[in-house]
Length: 348
Length: 251
Image (tube, rainbow over all chains, first blue to last red; front, side):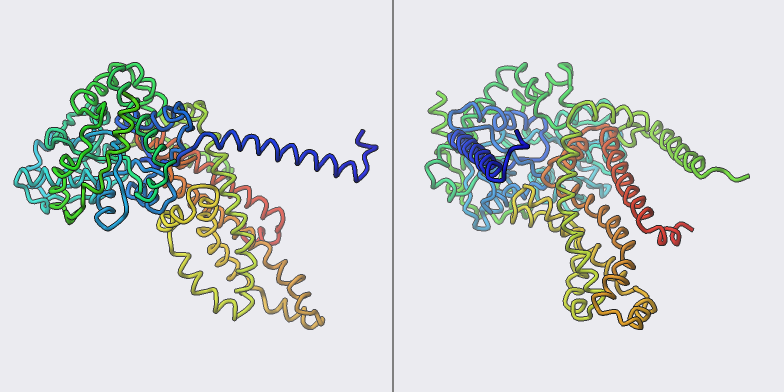
């Protein structure tokens, strides 16, 4: 067959092939155009508290008509999440409260429309053989490693130090990447206290006399750490408004399933947690973590009632004291519950 | 008695592993996992199916940026080495950019280019091209005047001197620039991927969350093996294609 093919036949075959490819692409594109894929920036690592949100974006959202699973874009540097949303290269962000509030105060057109979880699951851990209190750390001019100076855990700690009448300047704060790195630094005795997730604190407790010194949810009503945010300009488009509602519906559904069904949560941890140790955790380890998250910390509120200006106003003084904010941010303008209310109405 | 080189190398590696094993056993796997624990973690990592796609994704994107850096850096470096005008124009920029770490420019590139192929290849390009340029500039400036004078005395034109004297003289240095560039390309790619927690950089980020250092060390071992393998391949290619230069450097 090919031996008898002349140049004209070859061109015809080529043109036919290209047409088929173009048509195929067009058909595929038409189907793809029906369902929208949102670009959502999240934290690079998914700890136990981040799993319901990850599940909502990577799996739940695709079950809502008109949407595929989100293009989840893990981000190592926390402030980068909000920066990319402001720059318009991401639709939504699972951003930290500190950088979102700071950007809004600086004039960025931002809206907080939901919670990635309520109340942080990070706690301050010390080696109890060496340190019994924050007073001891401060007296010895000790060192506390945080992810970054000015982030929500740094601010939380400054607030706790001030509540205990300890001068924050008597403590050396240093920046240290991931919570795993910080746990190892504490284990090696290089630092005196570190924030880490509750499940990591439980793991570390198996290695020695490492105890939790500060539980943010006991210090504050709600210590917000991560929120669902976007820009006001993005929310002007009707299609984007519907997308915001869909994302919140997916998150609320995931929160409710997490609260009600440990087996489901465990399956999602195996799927979406970043750490191999957490992915493979057995019930003896994971169930107490789930219990702490859902009942003690109340990390996954079924209706996100906590998302309001009054609750946020309670944490602003700590940010102001820490120098992370001037305190001029207009919370009424920044927090927009309209999409949350719509999502709650549709979910019933 | 002359001890074979391979045996000496093996002895060195064995002693290092033994020292590592002893240190790891004393400190525990949360601080320093032992080679045995790292080997076991390495097997797990290879088995779980995430390694190969990550390596492939990292490899091809890095190669695009690296080859672009070579394609631009080699001629630019040669031009800088042979032309005072080009040298005057480009050198200040080269000196400024060569000291900028990839980590410093990654956030800006993410905002400008997003997180796709363009971002990764651009970071690799920017982090690599100036090292290639610097190597080639020095190589081009170092071409022996004696050789050029001989060519001139035979009435060789500018093009003939470039084609038959300068280019052959630069050949081994292109391969040196390729080796230096490859190391920087690999480092830049890993840095870029760690920022967006994708590919191999994402695996490194995730491994860092585990309390045990074994998975992290396992990935680092893979990275070291990749780097050593690739640079050895380029060295072998250099020795094969420029044996006259290899004989000078192998002494």
